[in-house]
Length: 313
Image (tube, rainbow, N blue to C red; front, side, top):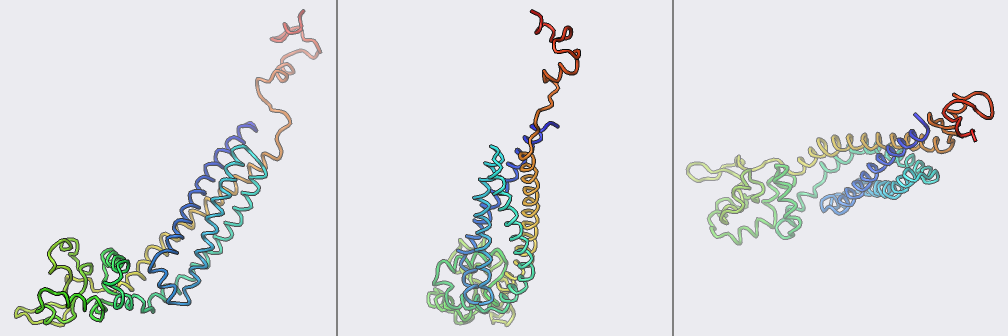
């Protein structure tokens, strides 16, 4: 392969890989901004001092994403033009980003156990259910979505709603007072019901589920309702973090980004090396001087061959 063709291939592959990295950088910045603005993550970080390191990690990752966005454009410019100074700047950025991600991945691998333990020990979700559910629309919508998707109910358990402001409001507005008289505060929101999607647009009576079942005589038994999610959302969040976010997404994304980074480093280094030492003369098969030297006689004025007519006057 000639020098021009090899350089052209390197430039094309470098542009493609750099564009992929640029998209990764945008995705990283967007995800981290969502983490910073998420209500529950902010509440957990504020409630547990050991989780404040999360914000530090998130800001570092945002800096990495912004660096990929900025230097990615420089790298694409350097490969497309080509410009060695731009490629060298891009290469330095890639090395720094790779080392940062390697260190961050190793740190997060050991730090995830502390995060899960802090969530397990926290009473934050129980406090939110008791104090803010039903009165804060953002909290109510977030909890309803979480309870439906994670198949859980309450903070620590479904009994958190028995001590909540929400149940007091429900009983005060209940059109059928005997229900509250019989079950007391033994109710949970409709999002805790396994058939919530079926009943959510029904009459007002189906805007909640009963915590405990009734026997044939109508007496309330101390047995949880089988149509209600009985696991607390705190436990479901820990399981979700362990099975999905921290394990699958974290490992897969880290490996993918690191592989692309290493590929970009190799391509950029090869392209810089190629641009530093271009050949003195191309060795084309159709080069006139080469053809004359190969096929003509050893005289300054050839008398035969395809170029003889150029010297015949």
